[in-house]
Image (cartoon, rainbow, N blue to C red; front, side):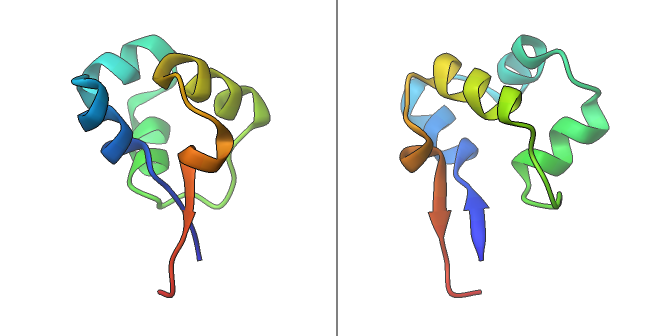
Length: 67
């Protein structure tokens, strides 16, 4: 299962979920589903923005788990 690693990256950067939510400009419902890995798709535009905001690569943004 592919999982979004946003919460760990935010913690490393000393940023909050609220900060990221405001930066992305998404609805809170969609944002919350995305960061909690409850969504089935993520736009490339959002992946790019996440990488720029968190100063990371897509490899760091995603992880594969056995679940």
